[in-house]
Length: 246
Image (cartoon, rainbow, N blue to C red; front, side, top):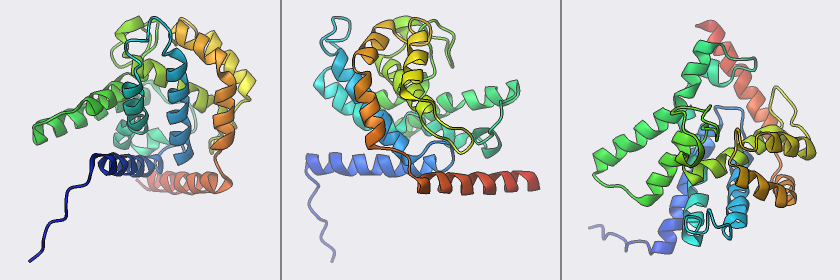
């Protein structure tokens, strides 16, 4: 008769959860233009920016050490909804049509719907899941209300998603994709600063400017490799070929 093993201690459960989240995220990243290194970078960008803002009076109450630790673990799942976007749209190297863009925008709501359905089935929730939902649903919102899916503005946008917006845009700007080269750190700094008060929370942009050297160092420590690019190119070629056969 099989004897059940003892339950994992909390520290091991946290480690197992972190590994599982990263594995699931890695699988989803095989389908889009980001590499697995993207996940490592944005985790650390969000962490660095969050720590920088802890002493700020607007954020000291919300950006506790416990919340930032939870946020670090949740970040890899922020783009989980892209799993539900067709390759012909997700991998399209040229500009999306308006119809395609409307479909692309649903990756934010698909993620929340999946998580809420899981909560109903299991009959339970957790603050970690709430943080994932905030990230997934609101990382495309903009400070001036011009983002999606809800058109939230200012502090209506969860603080987690506002941090994620800065990290995600910086990485998108500076990283090489199979169809474009990334721009230099200094140029990316300029784009982020131009978005101060329109795309991004102004205080978060100021904090980013104060620690921009940390962002550059993180990018250098976790660069995409040539193997990453080859893998992405292979997937893109196969996806385009399959789409052409439809």
